Length: 338
Image 1 (cartoon, rainbow, N blue to C red):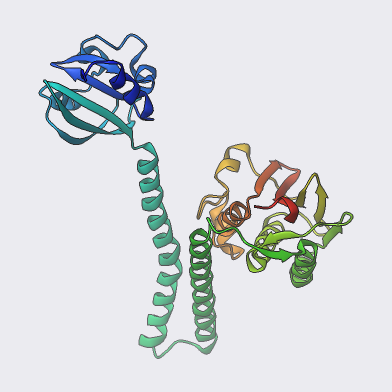
Image 2: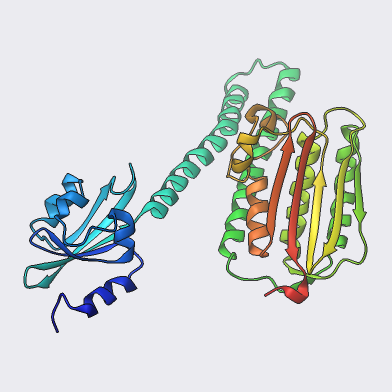
């Protein structure tokens, strides 16, 4: 069978990634992905006209089999893995494997480690500093000794909350492909969470108003995770959504078209539009100082996002400066869950 016959073109088009067959620098065949990347007239042209990357050409032109990583083909900074294989008769197969997702995942991992280290280092530095003072200074006044001890306890609890949230997030991610199967009455979950958080709301002069709209169908879910989801959303509304005493937090649960919708709205300061896409990132804070002062770990909405995804639902956050924030979670009802 001839290398340059129709079967080769058909073989290339089966590949999702761009692929070329060349002989001595001339492109003999290009699949549809390669034509989209390099242009429709790429076949029968000189490879140096299609690919202007010196590193890539230094391996492609001599036909050296192997894998190399290059950037900048197609778009500035875009990473690729070039897989070069000999086909015989001076022909080579070049596949362009997009590494953008892997590069983004690596950046997220590096950012996560840096952020987690920073978040833990800050309270740890306070603990070490006050503990050393108490251990090394015999003349610390009783009032200061009590103050230092309270600070150590507060910062240690903050570290514990961060670690617990990280462990919880890790467990949720580990189960993300396992659909939960427990029959949950989500209204009962919400009522229980509201009862627990109502004292905290009243401490800041607010009230949580929960409305259950009609007969709410069963949701297939993980009770502990759904409880944490509602708790995190209501806690955020209490923590950041109270502009003045008397502003309530409005929560509701409704059902329509085979779904259950949980909404939580506050009348707080609101969030600028540019922050909204990043609110579910780990450790992302609109106001870092305020978040830490109020006891936030920066992981609450990241946890909510992963819980919603595991339950095959959707999360929407809308906010207007000066008017407040509105969060909606839509979950499939049990009869449509898969």
